[in-house]
Length: 310
Image 1 (tube, rainbow, N blue to C red):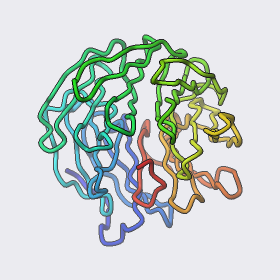
Image 2: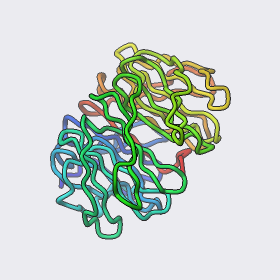
Image 3: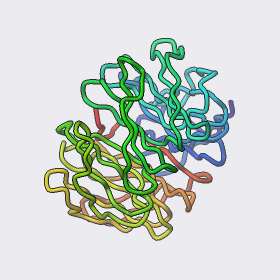
């Protein structure tokens, strides 16, 4: 482990950005917007998420077949869990009984025991399982299948595939609406967020957001989601889930991808996959505030002082 230039005692306002192509994470001071360190992690760190108690940040290393846990306050590595096969996207179920990882290259979804990460079930998921979301009762996990243009539902109590349905082309990000009624699926191929009534498996509408609609991030008010439209001259849209309309749009170049929001609601941070930057959007003035240079192909970004989904 190589830790360059980090000062743990001063990292109370720490952001962590994954550089997927470099196999590193960048440590960023959220007050000065300066990169204070870079950590060599593993091959292809793509997604990250906090543990349910917020005491660790889990980084999924797809090509290294492992999970790396970091202290979200200091950026120091806590532990590694090995033999996690090709973890791309990951998630803890709301009831904390299940840990799920999609294996994008191997076309399967793995369900683990979150206490010791022993494998419970391995399910085929053709083709290219990408993002995932849970229902509030932890009965199902829903997975987008990018190359077959489908969403798959897995029953968590039985660990069996419950159903598969077609959706708009190249689905990526997926979230549950705040009322637990709809799945919202970002379609890169059609530039829309598709609204699906998941209990009846019906597509209700498609909301245009922008080219290559890719991921969704809660604003933190129980109503709105930010949608990243991942093109070189990209944008981020604000989706109102009560009216199912886009109510704001921000120009965010460089391929905006994963996002996080400050708890005070004043800033949105987004990784720019094609520009080696983290873009900071001023949500008060509704414009790009500044760009933070990071590593190659930055993917996930996280800090504790965020407006989360939980």
